Image (cartoon, rainbow, N blue to C red):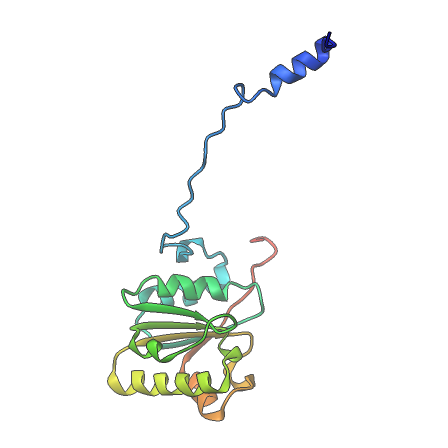
Length: 173
């Protein structure tokens, strides 16, 4: 015959039995376009920048700051406002001619664009500026003057409204 479990083992088995702890599946809607949103961006030092991006009146904005300051978060939130918006992470996605059709174009890590992509971004700047349509938001780790990109593109980036994203204070962390 089989051994009978001890009273302690039986109590533990009853406590951890699946019928005692029903599991409800949590549903996360990762396809929602409203995340990340401006409301989830932390940091009082960047209020003006968040306001400017929410208003979407400025046609050319460039944000820079150290890794982890929230540049990608802001670019995605900004692109989420536009009906015809594109978000490009230059580190992982190519910038191609389809970007010319976007009304809102966010290019994250613009300092990582390949030479042909830099030429295309320069063309996008000129088309947006000359046509009076389109909005462009760029990010990088450094201010435009310090980027190792084409000189003509660097001057266009300097033409943007430029913001240095401030990191969270110790109290905000």
